[in-house]
Length: 379
Image (tube, rainbow, N blue to C red):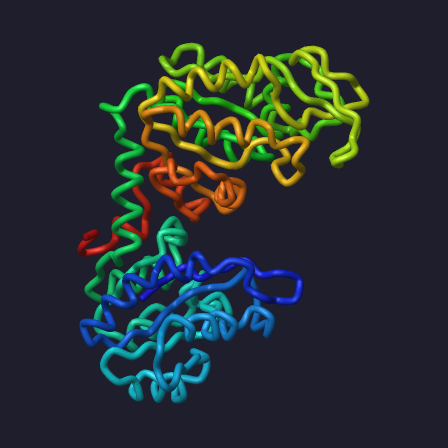
């Protein structure tokens, strides 16, 4: 069973959030109930070699809190004899895990038929890792071509919500809220969404690149000079589409990101050269809230403003209020977005929350993922 247990760790290698582990528990419990013998496959971080700090032992220790069994084997695939012993020692309804799959060169390069070796430990392949299904890795794609393969409950649920999002033709207006730092990461999904949604509301550092493309001063705000020309093309191209690409009218600016920063409010074309844009203000908030309150479906990507600092999280709270006051279904994704609304008193108004990042972007652009298409059954 392929899972995505790539959990967030702090500086001392403790798990900060085990949401990704808990998300797959329904599939694991279902298989336990069916008396399956389960070998879990996951990665942690992006190691290029065996690095003890990226061992999945920390994940196994957390899993033990949710899965009660006498022993829980963590097997190193380089030791075939020991790994086969772990697999053979499983009783019906028991779980084990292979070590960090990215420790092994064959995961990315299929060296010496690694995927066949991996497949030799099981009879059926279950993909429950939506967050890795955009990758053409041995443990995602090639193993599914060798074994009978099905979607786990988490993956099937994510497919359902993503297909509803991509094919949202009846629930109009469909509004996408796209924030973030790098235009390079978001430009292609913005391009894809222009064909599907009615309004795209932009904010975050990404806006500065759009403002620069409009010829505006952005002060000391972060922007990507190498993306300005490409953003200009997107803006021109968007003019021929039924979708509106909506940019802020005014900003909260400051000379530093700090609770004691001296702030001021300026129009979008009046940002001082010695200050940076850190939040939006009344003109933009009123405009965006009006659009959101009229929406029937809202897709929210990335938190707004410097939400960690109370002085610059005004818009982050404003969007939650707008969602709560609308009749829209809402889909929120990306860990930082989820963290930004987790303690908000109106968080229950969010219809669906997904912790998966790049896979969601890829699904929005292409309408499916390689790791989904290869499965024998998606239900």
